[in-house]
Length: 66
Image (tube, rainbow, N blue to C red; front, side, top):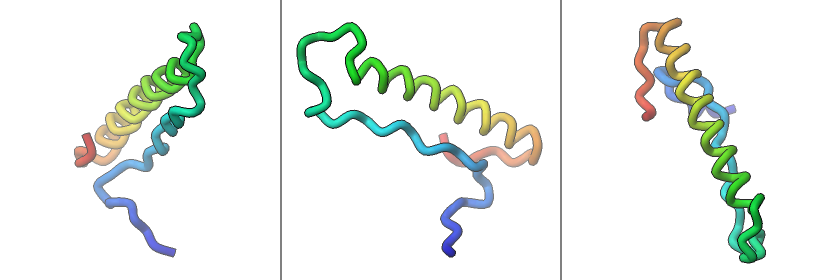
């Protein structure tokens, strides 16, 4: 088993997967797959920022990932 995690990094969830262009019908839907993606991306960014702050508070180590 290979540990690819930097020891100075908190365990972070993977970012949401961007929709493939074929997943959008191009009709300007109010709830387009890209709207869902942008919302998921925003939640992910908020979660990552929280996890990094918690990690830094617990360890005193500043995360090197921005």
